[in-house]
Image (spheres, rainbow, N blue to C red):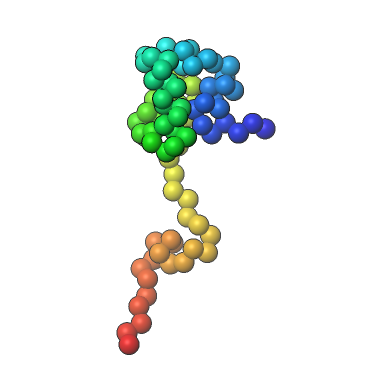
Amino acid sequence: MKNTDSIRQMRKAKGLKGFQLAERLEVSAARVSMLERDEERGAVTLKMMHKAARALGCRFEYRLVPEVNAGPAAAGEKPRYRLV
């Protein structure tokens, strides 16, 4: 199965060219190119990710997933301190 967790990968999986996604987003084709590069470098906004997902017929999810065995702070518990 293809990895489709980025805007560019999903756009290609849907068979869309950059200018076609640009039309759906009502932006320029250059802006779509910038958006895809911004996502790669971690500089895209959540608002734009949501907008791009809708334009691609997808749902955007932003989640925090706790690490397994990451200690009490990761589980939301207060750390215990030992008085010396």
